[in-house]
Image 1 (spheres, rainbow, N blue to C red):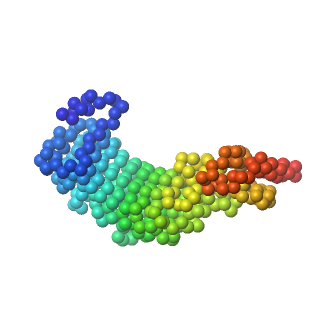
Image 2: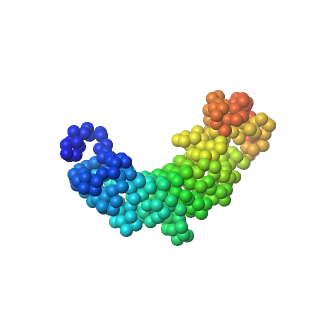
Length: 338
């Protein structure tokens, strides 16, 4: 009796029911599903069960009968095209469901991805291994519209979906106005050409919500992305770069995860240290806002005193921090005297 199991669980527990890689006879599976009806499990995981269309319909009924459900995994259980609409509607009308895993459930069809994003309810969507390469410009535009208007989704995993350069541009374009997505995983797809990859650089110049971007291995590393993460043409441009997003598969990745303030200071310090070797910091200070001075000094103190040789920004950490500080203060002191 699943009800008895739930009764003895402590309040802090997250009740989860899982059937993984077991192909049960249909009558046994339906019996289990019936016994689950009305039970307040918060997580259901059905993985590679081959339960067919009747199983999908049973899962829909299960969702409708459990208002406490928070996440649902159906990975490697195929969903027929004729059931996609009913399945998406069941998700859209559920009051608490926030995470869905449909890895390997709908090979070659993008309808459910667009509908789930358009529902504007889910926080986490995983649709890996589905060959979701968008087959027409209308499909791409439909997805862009859905993601642009979405205000709930924080994680989207599209690993190994045979996505093309055109699909990459589509996703990057949708990121430009999106302000809620925190993690986008595109690993395992064909490596993107430099033109497609550059679109992500454009997106990262304005998008400061995305915290993790996982690109396919071997993806070209373009100037656009380098400048969006660290524009070292001036201290102002470095301070205004993207300090939030960690991009995997980039050489010398320019942002550490979860440390935007530290990322900003490392970039500032890198420019100061590089210029100080040639004693040319002073000539670049005229256009620097005085309000940036405390952060400049903090950057020198933090990274000159405790350099991390593994970080790209501290390649010039042999520069004496006190010497840089003296050069900075001398310039601003002269400015104040004028």
